[in-house]
Length: 190
Image (cartoon, rainbow, N blue to C red; front, top):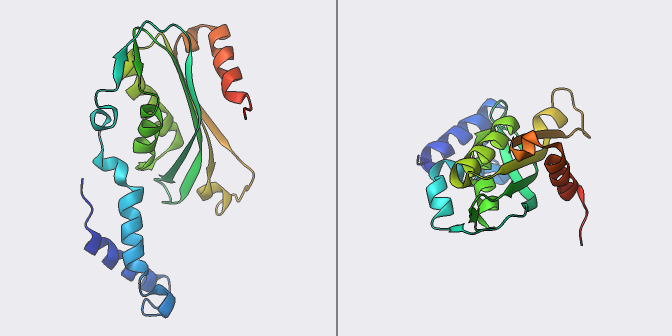
């Protein structure tokens, strides 16, 4: 999927007029160009695939312990209002003969978050992609997000957070494993 920067600029110019602004006003002259460039970045996840992101960074290892990457910043846009939601993602898995390069987990989060999203879908897409890549013994994905569509409009609840999770395999079936994962992602370090 490619973006048409010229069309995005025209749409933004028209939007400024529709909301009662003057796109020729000094502060707004370059806004259509800036917004078009911004939308290219904010929707860049559509141009990527899991294969491109991961490449050859899957390794066969006999690792047995839980692997957790936590506090991964994410920024996305709510598909209902085109307003930002953002927060942190925590991803953990128990290897089943394969591991993934650690940096690839945040890249997976980033790829899916750079699309119009729902937090629930984003959580599941991250989990599904790691599950299909590694087939781990257990997998947990937890996202904690703040939604501008809820905080700055609508119900205007400024201190609200949304938590979503997907737990598979031993993270789902074994309460002790799940508790260990939740304990690791709640610890404060450094």
